[in-house]
Every structure is written in structure tokens, then in C-alpha cells.
Length: 318
Image (cartoon, rainbow, N blue to C red; front, top):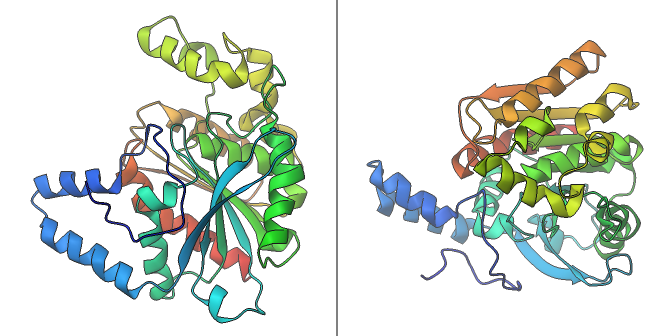
């Protein structure tokens, strides 16, 4: 099938797109619901024609991981027009089964373009690294030190390669699903590095044994988690890295926090989101936490992505 997206300098990937269906699949579903496919295609085409930002995809070498890591960078309209200007940066982490091209094949780039064109968000860079199934942390067995890569190689490498305004106030992190877990984990572990963190449907599990119980679904989840958390998942290692545990003691002074989750999340992540809200509330830490109608799918993410981007835009220019 011909892509709806414009030609870009990107690498190709054949990995599965789980849990986020493609934007084209969403168009087909919307058509079945009685919304004109012609109108939607016109909307997408109009957005592309009016777009002035761009996406650049490349790779960054890593001694820690021993292989190059692919990433994509969403560049705002003024990046090419004003070569002297520097920009804040948002690191955005993809979900399990997705990759660094999530803003391309998911249609999120069209949403960002629309927000820029309407003046709803200011201009900042959005970097999306490929993390496979690492959960953005160092694995229990020590073989994949992805958190070390982020801190020691990716952040400094990206901020040297692109025109980024230095300093904590101009750096933030966000993510969806597994990426939401990774964003919260990284920001809570290293709050001195980020002005803000946001997470959509974060993969926060408040009761690991129940999530990986001896059922077909639980067995599949245990296998998915095994590469990072041990097989079977090590509860001690899990708790040591859990955003819920980190939120109980981390010094989060000055860190702005936003999260949301669907009330019928397919993996039950709303219970973890609610638990995080209670912990932050009990510590009197200012934050935004929302439970909205919805599931763990592209429609939910697309509906609420503008809220987190507006959240970061306000903080970058506070």
C-alpha cells in the first residue's frame, strides 16, 4: 500500500506495530464508522502541503550498546529558516513494538504540524530514539545498559548534533505505554536533568505477580518483560526501577509532571496511573493526573497527545 506520508530520509523497519495501529488503519476504521474517508484524506493532504517543519532520521553510535541507535528528530518550521536560533528539546519515548519512527507511521507528526500552524504550541525539537523492548532502563542481567546509553551518549550526543538551548529548563521527556514508563523512570531517577515529564498510558504495574500470573495472557507478558526484568521477572529488580517506588522518595522539587490513561486500558494500566496520582498527592507534589474514557490504542493517544505537547510548550516558555 502506498504511504500517506511524504518522502523522508528515514531507515526502514519491519518490526510489529504493537500496541499502536497505523494511522492508515485508523482511517479505515473511521471510514467504517461513517466518516468520509475522502474528507480525512483531504485533511491529511492539506496538512502535508501546509507543513513547514520536517523529520530527520539518522543514527547515533554507541560504545555502551556496541551498535548504532536509530532515532528521528522532529524539527520545527524555524529550524532551517533561522540558523542562529536554538530550541528546547523534548525526548519522546515510543511504546513496546514501535520504534523511532513512531511520529511518522503513527501520524503524530501531522498532529504536531497542526498545533504549530495554529499556534497552540511553541517551537521545540522532538527526539524519538529506538529502544526496542528495553523499557529505557539497564537490564537486570547487565547486557543492555540502555539507561546508561541515554544519559552518557544519547542526550549529550543529540544536544551536540542539533541546536539545543542548554540547561534543565529547556529539556523534557515524554512517552507512551512502555515509553511512558521509561519517561517517568528517567525523570524520577534524574530530576536534575529535566524541567518536566509527561506520560500517556504509562506501563506502570502496581501488582507485578498478578500481571504475570500463570495464565496465557500473564505468560505472554512475562516473556515480554523477561529480556529486561529477568525471566521470570525479578520483583526486587522491578520495584527498584518502578516509577511508583521512585515517586515515594525522589526529590521531585521543580519537576512538572503530567500523566493520563484510559479508564478501560487493555492492560489495566489505569490502576498504576491512579496509584502514582495517590503517591504524588500524599507527598503534596504538584502534578496533573487524568483518567479519561478510552483504551490502550492509537485513538486514545492521538486524542491526548496535544495536551502533553501543550503542557511542555507552556513550561519551556514559562
